[in-house]
Image (cartoon, rainbow, N blue to C red; front, side, top):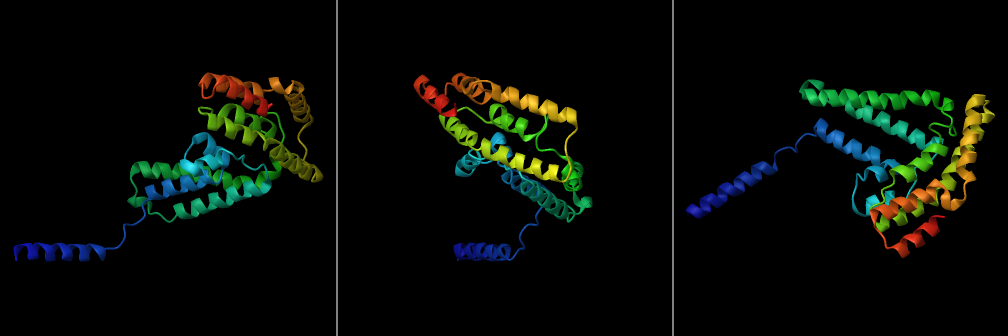
Length: 234
């Protein structure tokens, strides 16, 4: 009887707990979920930060973020979604740290949303932050090269650079048709920079030379395999 009583009590407790409402979503839950969604929508950021794991992460490390107005608009839509969701949380119930995080997040997302008004003033090809600079940096600086698989993924992404440059050129032509053209000194500096970048033989271009040096330093592949990968990159 004693065992039966304990069992009935246990069943009763389980029954009661099963009827309890699910825990409310906290602002910390939102921060984590939205961060994952934000990074997931930008392959370059996902690849460089290695935010995810397994097959999902490997897929990102074989992509290059689009250089199109459509992609940038999706970021604006997502930023507005984040602002709308953030506004639903009661600040009075947040900790001081969470309120500070919420303020910082709101400020960052508002910049993205407000920036869309001025999208025609962002030139896709320029000497400091255009695709002609960002694409090399994405691979030469940010792409991880710790394993042989990383090197294979690098070459896959390198094969997408031409497509992304074509997208940037198409956008530049669209802006030029609106008479939105960078100042002459920016045009000259950008053209000079791009000519210098492609002026070296492929084997000495940063896309290849840096790749070979970093792969050698990581010792992630044998000398023969590294030479094979270098040749593919070239």
